[in-house]
Length: 385
Image (cartoon, rainbow, N blue to C red; front, top):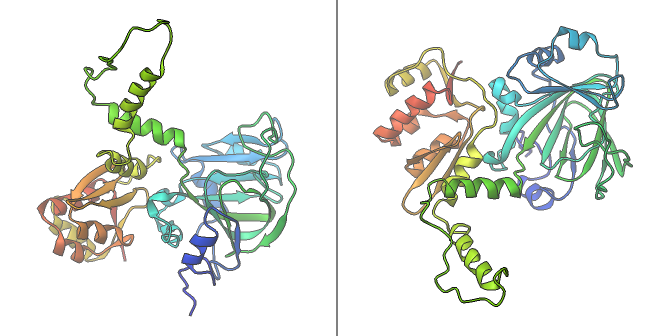
């Protein structure tokens, strides 16, 4: 029997992770069967006019130069100046601004949720495109409305093969190895580093579910910054075993070995701060979205009363994760960590919708107060049924 919540069609999630994830592209016909776009092109255009929303237009032609970008916020004048074809509007973080769209990203929870970046939606005029390019992250591209022609090339891209005078990573030369025309509900998975080029056949909307690709440079820099912020200034390079050198200006191997020993203290795999730092770092959301409720609450009883008439959910603008240890469990929410019991962490994170009765049955006093605080901060929210 086919799992209607599995966006991979006849391919099992386990098979996908073993054979496709970060290895090779995959086209899934009717991954979202009978899909109807929950947002219109006009609604997307309106969102792009808001100051806090991350948006851009890519003009292949008729701009100051080929592939000219226009960064939001947009306005009526922006749209009225657009040509009839060859341009695309892109809006990021849609699930954070429109939590009712979170059901789309929730279909991909077979991948660790803390790896998720955002839901991006693009509107393309006829022949609209963002050009042939590669991404450094994993992305599932769901066709929402209209048709697009997708072409891919899996060969490595030469360093010089990039269009100049644009901040976009668009390739000057691109030759397709495979090509498909996708309809609403069809989905293309694209691993990092695979060249792809989508061109709209008429007007169209597409939904991109992207996963974070944190660079080694960022990981190392952020971890070192974290573990060194409270180090005593009395911890300095020392060499009590130093001997007289023939050449005073020579940096000898024994000096490098002392430095290596210093680094080993902090960059070892069992560093006591590694788990806490990584959980806070990966749960720290990049989008600043205001989600606080109009009225706060003071007790868990008030929260129960609210949810008696609706549903309590984790807000998609927030990131939740947890890590279990022998002696404790750390719950990470938007870059902060909380020590909780493991059953509480699992119950809070297992689905986007929260079973408050289940949570309150296992929560202690501090965890009950945490639920109240999370509601007041907008990290969990209430929806009327």
